[in-house]
Image 1 (tube, helix red, strand yellow):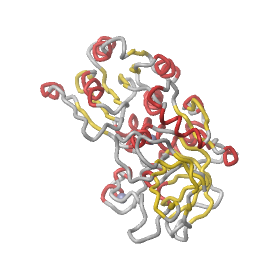
Image 2 (image 1 turned 180 degrees about the vertical axis):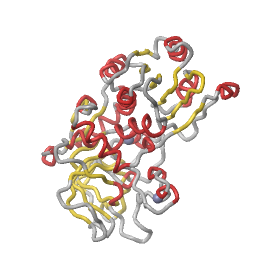
Image 3 (image 1 turned 90 degrees about the horizontal axis):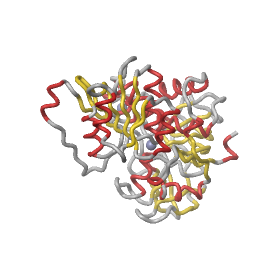
Length: 364
Ligand SMILES: [Zn+2]
Ligand SMILES: [Zn+2]
């Protein structure tokens, strides 16, 4: 099967023919329908985060089940699914306490000594976070997939697996924003837009979108932002504090940089909470005024929207089908697998929300 392979950081993805193994008892073989291009893929592509090369990127994926392993219950050939980087074991203390996204054994790799899931000319190729969606097929652990209703278009469904679940989960699960509270969102890409629409969904009274690109701010307004702040033209901390008479109840950082995390904390009012959603470089640092903590302000992080993947995917799919959240406007372009490299290379200059790789023959 064909896949876009990252052979070296800084070099373009290469389209290559890979061998994909048969499912082991706990695995599922998927035919990929669509894969979103996410900033986490970009982090590997440019070397901000390490990965075992050669690597197949792609983790925000939808597809159709082609084969199931002998231990897999609840999934059948032909089921439509989305994938998540947070597979789970169901047995560790985090799974047992309902925090599936923090599972200590995410089942991203096979056991030592087993045949690799993907090979090229006999050499192993790593599927990113156990998924590897920039490919025609994926072989994954069954806990990394959740089924979606047949009436949900698969190119939109893919976005549920990362951008939507992370944005919504950050608001609903990590920060637990309540009706009437005020919210600021720094960074209005695919995940940030979902923080904005989740804040609207829970009834936030003020949703202030902060970005440097006017096209992204315009889109944030369409997703429910009540105010927009151009961070390139003004000091966003000062503007947000002025707009809210002293600071917001919740600030979300969806960029992944120490400086913007400090800005998020600076935007808080008394008892405010800053939630870090963006993925920063491992060597990045944050400095906050120690005295500000005495105002009962909090700085916290979240991972994948602190989500319980199968439950939250089902909820989000239902909300879309009921017309209560937007997915269509998140897709700014549909591209082929051979355009994945261009989408990654131009990501930082892009004003779009999400580029989605589609395999048209599988979408129906
Ligand atoms: Zn992602
Ligand atoms: Zn676990």
